[in-house]
Image (tube, rainbow, N blue to C red; front, side):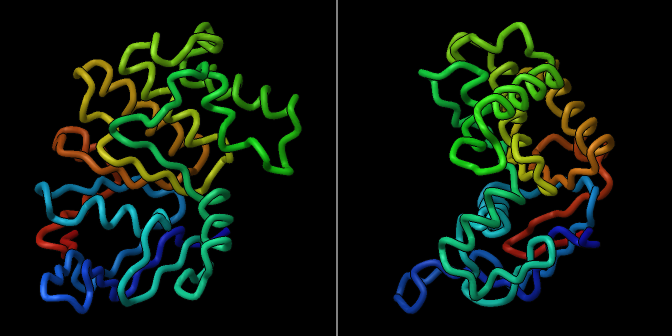
Length: 227
């Protein structure tokens, strides 16, 4: 198993590069996230947190520098190779869920496994049911997700992120739209997954009380990281 699930070296991100309106969002970022580590990412709006997560999540490319995910250097990868690595190594949980409202909770959790050779239909259904049971939603497997509460929808999103048993989960303000009780339930679920399955987690939050319960806190200030 890789010692580090994320290794960033001197990463810069520049939007509109080469144009008069060029904007540098990340300034030479170095970051290492160990296997099984739970790290909070904090910083003001516009500081570069989401850009950082998008690059780590292989949804965007750095303008310069290097990024390795689970010991795989990504800089020279093509889109197909990035998609393969992202699908097997990274789970995502966003503030807005991005669930498919016409699908049930079970069907939403199954989506990452659809078309993957590792999962035939029966194992895929079994894995999705197991995950929904783990997040406390077994009775709502067959409910349409738009019939669930905000906290329940976020737990479906967490279960979906874990479908491929990724070594890394990226959570971009997953409790931002939740009441305090639901936020606590979602955070506790992340902590449980981290401790019991060894999943490394990058957890972007504005909630200082939750951040203090993580293994470490990284502050993003003007596109630079301050541990």
